[in-house]
Length: 83
Image (cartoon, rainbow, N blue to C red; front, side):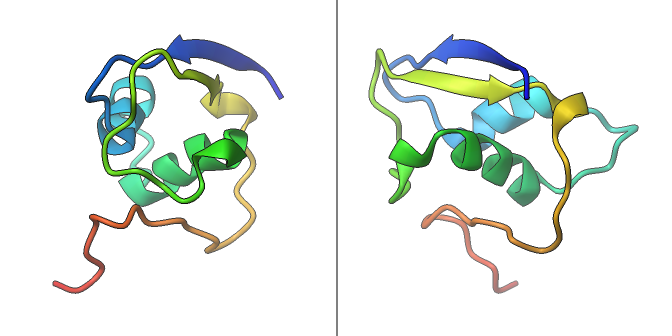
């Protein structure tokens, strides 16, 4: 799998990083899946902090290389699954 590196800035959040790196309305992929793409590539993020510290090196997978293996979605603790 191919990656690009990202060094976090104080206050970064995974949901915003997922949107910045992977947002593409044509693909219509749920944001929760995109967060799991980042967390699966960076297992040191478990448990998920709501806000990331600065100077953390993250591997950001290139989306065209990501394979979808089913509903194994990791929700951040601040995300509510109840509407």
